[in-house]
Structures are given as structure tokens and as C-alpha cells.
Length: 335
Image (cartoon, rainbow, N blue to C red; front, side, top):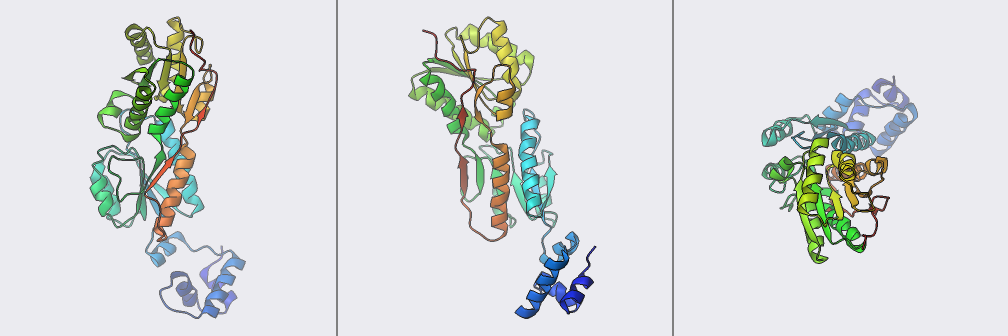
């Protein structure tokens, strides 16, 4: 392993001069700095992480705040987390994962220490109670999600309102006149989780514009709940021919439930979803869907945070436009 003394010997300077060149704590000549930097490159020297942190007053650690609350679909959340971790490593940063539901207290505990340099916050609510604290912190933050009031914050996410609209507009173009949204578990709406609320807003707005009859049904994420909601939909809306699903675990069970109740997909019922592409493609009847770009959102959240840490200006709002892919689960409405 290359040591700082090896770099000093190669550059013809003292170890303390190498340290000053790395930390910037004392001025050194440009010629000396260049010799040190050249020696570092030639020898492949990498400062110890603890030494780098002491020298720069930085920990090179990001906090990723993901409260694993009821109703959260963990596999999709972990796709975001993996993207954040992978991108952070490209910037020589590690990630501290905070999964407990601790609200402001948990954020303050981390922010008041030297554990992390910055924060990425997920599972954002429309009336987000953590916003006053996030606005007051000296450490930069990025939210994956948009609260109702995002002024002064840096937020990024899929445009879930536009995603809900895209699904309805696709069904409207195919001639469907009665549509339903099978949404997230009830507790997600009770918390006013932002992405779920945005989908409902987009779904309802697009249905109203196209003069479609529409309804919204929150649903627990289980096969039994899928069967019950399918029965309820057909009982209450016998003319139903289009369904939007925003509840990943329900996709396959819901299609099975409708088929067991005598409806063919897509012959009698067209189904769309907002979910990862790999899930939509894996269902027995591949589902027309708006992709959840977890990898891109996670990567871009880290890039925004790196720019903020470097003192660069970043946009307050980054909304990724929805991308709908047509598959076998949708077809023109039968006359």
C-alpha cells in the first residue's frame, strides 16, 4: 500500500507538505503542488478515508432516509436505494441508510453530528412535517418526491400526476368510457404520500377532461384483497372496461381475479399500470405501463447533491416525464 511518505519521497518534499497539498490548510507554491499531484497519480496513492474527512471536514457519507412505513412496497424502494448507493460510490461517497420512522428527531440526530455531509429523503408527504427542519439545516438535501410546498427545496421524481394522466389518455384513445384506479394501500393515502396523491390527481383530471366515468379504489397489497376489489368493481361498475393499477404486488393477482370472474384481458378489460418495466413484462399478460425510473431518479438525486456539495446551483424541481409502453394488456373497447 502506498503511504504518504512514499509520495513525499517521490515528489522530493516532506510528508507535511503532501498533507498541506491535500488539505489546503497551508499555502504551498504551485510548482510544489504540481509535483505532489504528479507523484500521487504515478504512485496511485489514495488517502485514508478518515484522513480525508479530517482534512476536509467532510465525512464522504450521504444519508438516505427511507422510513419503511406500512404500505411501502420494499422491492421498488430498494431499487431506488441501490441506485443511490452505486452512484454515490462513483463519487467516492458511502451511504448511511436510515429506515426507522423517526421523523424530525431522526433527521436532527444525524444532521447535528459529523456522520453525514448531506441527505436524500424519500417517502415524501404532501404536508411533509420534516420540511421546516430540512429548510433550516446547513447540510444540503435532495427530496425524492414533491410536497405540496416545495419552495426552497431540491426535489426530483417521476411526474406521477402526468403518469396517471398518460394511463387514462391511453385508455380513452382506445374508446374506453368507464375506468377505475386500483391504487396504493389505504394507509398510504391517509399519510398523504405525495406520489400516490399525484397519481390520483392525474387520473381524475384526465378522466374528467375526456368525460369518462371514473372511480378510485385503494387496496391492500394481497391476493385476497385483489379478489375482493375485482368483485367490488364489477358489482358497482358493470360497464367497466379499463383499469389503471398503481400497486405493484397486485398486478398479477388482479388480472387473475378478473379472469376468474369471467373477463378476458384485454378482450373484455384493458389493464394499464404504473410500475417498473421488468414487473410489467413478467406478468402472464404483459402489461401496458408507465415505467417507474428508479435507477435514473436515484442517480440524478445523487448528482444533484454532489453539485450542491460543490457549491453549484441546481434546479429546485426536476420532474421526469412519463414513458408509456404499450403491451398485450390493452386493446380497443368492444362495441
